[in-house]
Length: 252
Image (cartoon, rainbow, N blue to C red; front, side):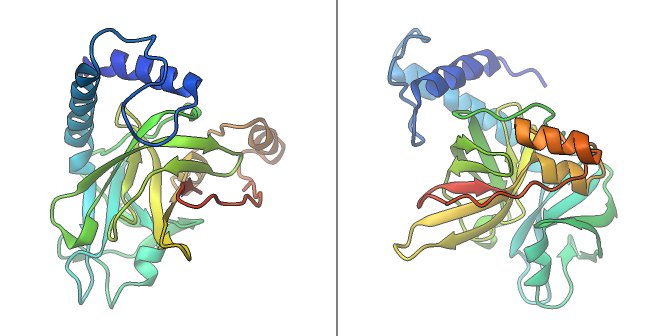
């Protein structure tokens, strides 16, 4: 799919990354990269969001059970169905997708691959490392709605075993797709929880876990993880205790 806004988005993402931007506003502190007004920037970002939604929407499906017709989300990727493992654990009775019952196949961390071959290919996995400052989008069936909800955020920090997102999500978006500006899958929503001050913290599984659960060679974004992958043949799970800042989302 041709996306004429992609060049603008890449330049904008690089600029805000260099500036060390935080939050999810559209104003770059230096504005050196762009011509035109802030209103024009907002319009182009809106076009990007509309394009990503149209591309990703068919690949995001609702999960239901014996009580709730929609309580979680799932993602079609490479002709297979992927969701968060905890979505299956908390189900009341049998998990249903479009009225059909499907068993689990393979599990890595909080990712579960379902025994189902999808007619559509769905989303493509990203194969390149993530960068701080990149814009990301999340699609999931929030609050039991039939149509997916779109949320936008940025990558705030990249570590060897997880990535932090500056992003807030809603109940029901667990298992939903986290994609980059080209619509490539970079993660799956793990959970939405609250701290003592009622700040939302979202955990999301990342590229390495996605490649493992799909049986693909993992693509890592850090020297530490790359070294371990070479040593163990690519199947290692890198663990590092990282203190989670309040109000940040996490890719795990």
